[in-house]
Image (cartoon, rainbow, N blue to C red; front, side, top):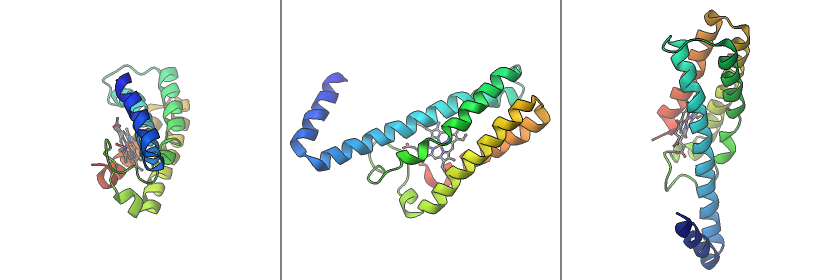
Length: 147
Ligand code: HEC
């Protein structure tokens, strides 16, 4: 892995700015995928709780909801020009429909904030629908913009 990274680095130096751009795209892909992995880690556990497959612990649930709300603001900046090929499931449709994509990301952030607020009430009757609203934003975006 390290060897590959060093070869990668040598390649960048040899090829100059084109390769530097490609490396930047690669970093952006890793960045956004890393954020989404963290989203899934917490949102997945929350889903188990909402479905009654795991015990509800109000404090832990609210902590995860806060984390997801924070994470929801992070992926957008990782969708940079030139990052829609290579080791990514992000479709070029993102660039072609940027306003729609950005709108989807903002909706995700908004609904995640609402879920974090609902989680603080400790009332599952408020949490469940708020959780569902966030889930809709995941699916809505993946259907259009993720391979
Ligand atoms: C506005 C668009 C959008 C929203 C909202 C969104 N995603 Fe994604 N998601 C993407 C795109 C695009 C990718 C592909 C990223 C890549 O491969 O470069 C992705 C990738 C992922 C991945 C794979 C990460 C990896 O390691 O490759 C997971 C898991 C994921 N999303 C979970 C979620 C969950 C859970 C939610 C909601 C709580 C969510 N996403 C909301 C667009 C979105």
